[in-house]
Length: 402
Image (cartoon, helix red, strand yellow):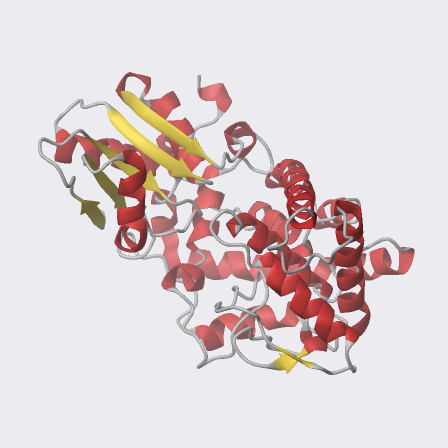
């Protein structure tokens, strides 16, 4: 039996109008944490007469099976550190010159060796437990939880964010007769997810990032509240300033490790990839709060000062995991169990099709043709390479299953 952690914010009125299960995405995000921190706000959107319910999907936070990989920050950082620093994978430029591309391609074997080691460590640490954490199993758990809480055969109401929209789509395909009200919020392409290599996902992701950044610069240029915009700025001039920031990050990166956004640091510790990944992450969170303007303004200001100027993130934040950048020195922050376990990779590897035809060399060549954080492409390749185990046969869903 696999234990599942569940949290419910009961309706504030009686009789109850309805219930809504919610998944925050990932894969790897905790549903119970979302209820505890954002449940009231979610209920206000749906109505006070609705139960707001979520759970930690298999392998995540308090739900089983227990997937483990790294025991602490030191182990985690030591494993990923070889990819970071001057002359290493993440210290690349914008890949518009042949020398940049040549450097990137020289890192193929290093990355392959790292990912193969990760795959072996994952299998040795978790064995058959890896077969039971795929999305199809999560959908069956959703049906079970609905039956248990609201009665056998009750229509399922579900709100999925980001990867949660994949869960929502699988629900409609696996249990079409159980579908109630379904919300797809921030859609992750389910057809590509179920039927194509992870490398094929990136073209949609990259296109979306470019459009979002352009939309952000258009809004910023027309607003007196945008801290990155000067009086005569247009969307085009803001994009040029952002490109200059990225180029400067590449040109001046000093290879410093680790980079911790919670303390003062040398501005030259911000590599091209760190800046680009931060832009991407801030765009993803933009509807809640615009952190991108203050971040870009602070970086641009520090870069224009004396070399080596001190820099600190202009708002409270926590480090990104090292395999995305940046990462935290041991003792500054305890990385969450979901990051240390790489449960997101375990779920993805259980879901996706075998991509043995795509090589890391292919993936890195793809990187050189699009403006996307290298670690996004690398993570797609990481998913495809760390794929020596699959979910139970009846717990995988692909188009050819009908």
